[in-house]
Picture 1 (cartoon, rainbow, N blue to C red):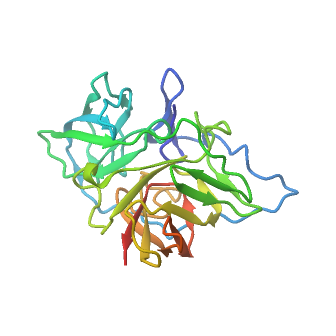
Picture 2: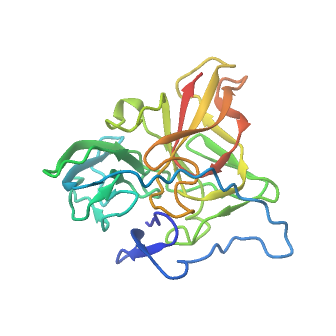
Amino acid sequence: MARKFGRGYRCWMRPRGFALLALLPLAGGCGSDPATPTAEEPQPACAEGPGYVDLSYPELDVGEVSVTVRTTDDEPAVEALVLVCGINVCTRPKYTDARGEVVISVESPTQKPALKYGDAYEYGEVGVLFDADAGGTDFGTVYVPRLPVEGAPLLPGQRAESGGVAITLAKNGRIDLEPFEPYDTDEGRALRAARLPRDLWPAGLLSGAPLELVFTLAPMGARLCPPAPLELPNSEGWAPGTAVEFYLQGLDAGVDAAAQRFAPYGQWEPFGTGVVDESGEHLVLTEGALPVVSNVGVARL
């Protein structure tokens, strides 16, 4: 299980190979995408996004953060990754124990702190902004879905479906994703998705967004080149023709041009509109396209 949080940063390795970032600059890159088309093949454009880096947030003393992480099946999320990250700094990775519990000491002043839990491979990854308290913060119990063990390959011209979520790359399409474990294999880079049930949303998840559905997706941070059509399951049973708006959650911390391309860190940003299709089974994009793999939310218009 592995996850790289952003680009252009030091990549911390877990003994069994889990790649993470601490927000410290590195000279050079941390890898390249082995699936990039050769020079003879057409090179589809990747969306760059408007960018949402904002350095005006104050540096806060966060203190000690504690949380219990459980799956949406109400089982302990064992060895689930947990971090506290701001746009300027990120704690070293910690993992939950057999009870799903973990305590993190945040030693550096942090801008826009968020609790991030799950690895976007075995579990979904969820990020929650919070108001820091130097005396510490106890999040109590939070929930994260398990992602499917087997993913759906993201291949040019093919529809990949996982957990009812479907992405269709263009015929000459590709994904742009640095190859850190487990995203360094075809299976690791496959689409995995699961819904986070509304009654299990943590406090502060929405950050003011009017969402009614949330889906966690992997491989987190993979740019879709060009941006791709998206389908979601109509899990709330909305009537065919119902108009909806799609949102992306910004989970990529950092302050350089590669971070926060499509949504502000820890917040949700609209990226397209659509409808419930005639079958009543899917929510489909009709305006806009998915530029990057991240958590997706939906609200009725």
